[in-house]
Length: 552
Image (cartoon, rainbow, N blue to C red; front, side, top):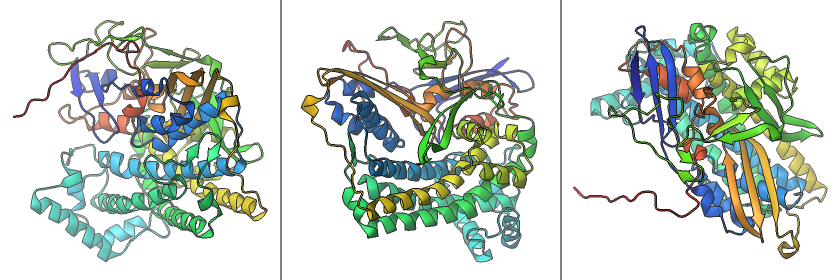
């Protein structure tokens, strides 16, 4: 048995390490995924005014800022039983939906696509054949002229000639597991560059109602503060203009590229590469009309989509048996002499990430879980999008539960979110038209309960996010967060159950153990955010470590 260590794993948020044990054929037999970053964000909230929770919790991550901001404020509102106006809920949703789109596009192109796209191969592409190839996946391919592709090749060649590949440095170019043709590689690289421009534009949509992004500031306990923007026709038009451009990019670029990838890697999809244990969780949310919601809630065990159970928050537990904690104290263990994690015993601790469980089971959460559960619960908002994608790629629903399938699920989700956004804006305009301009629920803080507890469960780009707050004497007494990556990257714990990351790696064949591209593909498909996943700190104020920086 041979051990392969990848540390750090790049193109993610935070610090992640993976160790896999492979047999003589290079097939993964065991995996250990470790969160390597120790953080203490939650302790900063202790003793603070509950109304400030959002501004501080939003700093948990530089990517998921809006998600944690809203989560913290909503948890406090739940503690005080405050119901916010419909307009405030819509504006929060508009910000969230824009973040979904931005996050999914950035993940696909800038964090994950280079696991499938060979830069050096794209230099050999024929511009005319590339244009023809693009028409296989879209009736109206984005920027599909011969001149555009020739210019893209020239840009890549300039990178190579200068000896500075920039964002394309340190790839496993030429790896035998790259399946795309030269022309397909050129299509994807062209869209990689276009997506750099796209993400700056879509971020404006969040900033219109959030004041700025990252770290928006317009969400407050009781509602939102961006009422002037809500009532300003020009601002609403600015938002709609950005969304129309976004929808065009998704329809003509992102979805077609997801189809391209699914077609090229069909054999891997059908072989179930990257499939975890089939336990999925979604808490649903984002009201559409009446009881209808954008996402459905539910629990699936073992890919049994015909028996979806209702989500029950009382079944959630969180353990630290194999995380580097001992009660309330940090309990970090040194590495082995060869630099590997200590994992020989079933009680060895090997990650800063805690171990959440649902009814004693590990769960996978994220776009894949939402798409599968919503589809099987006959959510009319999503069903046609899933059917169209599966028909175009000749795949089945179970095929989405794979490495490439997770990317397909993100693209599908982004497509129907783009449809939903315009209906949300229409609802907001209708409210304003009929003189409903409420954006904040008035309350007297001094008359609110001195002691209270609240929680919120939200679906955010990477999956299910929950915030829990305990308030004593009008100050935050305790705060806890379980983020999507906490669920997906959980260590084994004493129960021996692998989390989604680890389970998805089992059985993966690594062609070249010196270039473990296949491991990166699986892990990147979850869009890891380790900054969100680790938050415990020593509550006794004990000095844990002291560091000194030496100048050389």
